[in-house]
Amino acid sequence: MTAVSDTARHQDDDLRLEQQLCFALTVASRSVVGAYKPVLDKLGLTHPQYLVMLCLWESAPRTLRNISDALAQAPATISPLLRRLEEAGFVTRQRMDGNERSLAVGLTPAGAELRQQALAVPGTMMQRLGLTREEVGELHRSMMALIAATGDVHEGSATA
Image 1: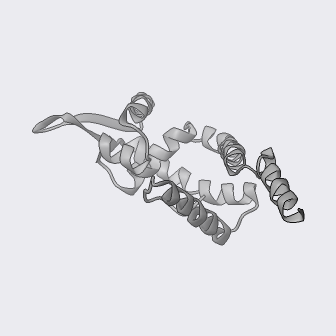
Image 2: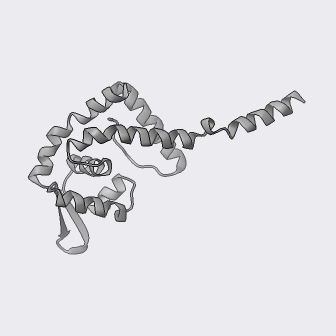
């Protein structure tokens, strides 16, 4: 009878909010993105815009499809971000020669210069979150393993 009651107790514990991985991930995500806000405000970027800029600082020009794949987001989600980044003077958007359906996204000189200011972001965030570069790398590997376990695999960066 104890084995049954232990199983029932574990099942009950499994439904406690603080036991839910989805809850912990949701709160952690919201908290970490919130911690980025004042740092990114100084760059004139939102967190989603920062992610787009990271893609472009790695390689530009890139197609809209390439950016959306890298960020594991639908092109329809990325398009408004690109429009706002273009209005801010950080990116250019042009139809590709020979393929009017494909959009090439490049950096303006201001967008390329913004990278210099952004170099401080990872270190600032590690300090704000009280994490070392190694701890960030381990968290990143763990999150990528979770993503892979869900079947939504994509490459990502290992810095804060």
